[in-house]
Length: 191
Ligand code: SF4
Image (tube, rainbow, N blue to C red; front, side, top):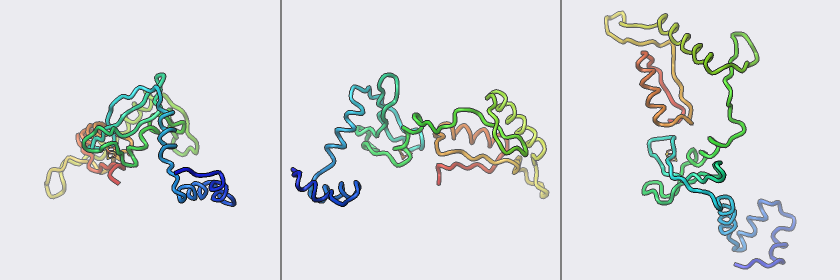
């Protein structure tokens, strides 16, 4: 539908931007072409690389658009027979997993009793975590219950995975923790 200058002024006068857009839509204007054009500009000349969403075992297909060696967009792949171009809210946010100035990229350590964090080397942090896991397990491992039942477990540690861990990592992670006798294993992705 054509929206005249007069119509435009009528619906936008005295209205905020959001309601003005609502008014235009009310007049029958469709924003779909504008959105499509903006999206097209964003991915123009970009190379599309097929991939899958890493977050759950549904395995929705995605298209990763790359320009100049940088990811510029990630969206559902319409050719996929099971997600047909759609992504759930988590999958739709994959782009932010790659391009996000707020993402923590350094290892931080807070000493016991300290109120601030220090940046530490990854190697040091890995050794420290391994050392504490071994000590805690050695100190708390329980082979049998008082009634003689074999349990081979420790309840002194638990594992909590984050929503951005992928299916394969979680698979290996839970095998690792179960191998140590940890029984409290949870992942935020199930919420
Ligand atoms: S997290 Fe969402 S988008 Fe990703 S595979 Fe699972 S259902 Fe699909």
